[in-house]
Length: 150
Length: 150
DNA sequence: CTTCCTGCAAAACATTTGCAGACTT
DNA sequence: AAGTCTGCAAATGTTTTGCAGGAAG
Image (tube, rainbow over all chains, first blue to last red; front, side, top):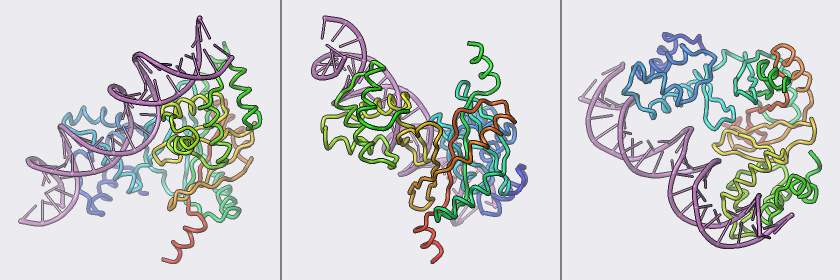
């Protein structure tokens, strides 16, 4: 859960005895260069092919898996048939996602209000809760406007 | 958004000029018989094959799609690699899901507190929000207990 | 009767895996 | 040098689609 810099992450890989390969670095760079973009494996692959045309899609998948296991990336699902990834939130500081039902755009939204709900849910159900995910579905300002015009 | 009875749903199909076929009825019956179970297409297929051994998996998929389009079923994703379905909630009355990270069990939880959060998010972001989905991840009472014992 | 539905088989996708060679440490 | 990591190709699992026959309205 350190900062999301190339150095810090490579250090973490090194500390855990994972090798710091050029492929892994180039994939990390893709996320650093596309912050807040919720990239899919295929998208990462396309970005990364420009610096390393030899890279294989399987390597991208394996690296995304690894980075998600290390909690450097977070794997998420926006109901578009593929997994997407973004840097994991620092500590408990969550953000949630607003998904536009028209254009598919994903916007982010900060909120800590869910922590208290989490505690309440734990008490009521007996679950020990370690995480939560919230998605809002609606229409973004642009699409909402054009819909209203119809 | 009517009640979830065979009659009401067949009526709705009829009203929208969809044919009421035995396959569709048998699939609906599977959901009526397995309320609150979040069935996957494959699971529906296996249930339904007992009454209609001739049915095809493709028909199950097409029917689930149709019922989700009509907002009779809701398609959901519990990160287990397949879509799952349950009856769509009546009106605005949502329930949320608690997913056990150990055994995969899904529990339900009623709460309306999110409605106010929804309004706040709408105001802050300019989205017009039509729905939301909340998932909590943790350990159910049984799994939590055995984990504590280790 | 007309049109929509169905079952089958094949196709389409996203993701995973086996393996031999290449590279990090 | 040892063990991990990579690229490729093949395999997997889920979901979709084309088509010809069959059934609902």
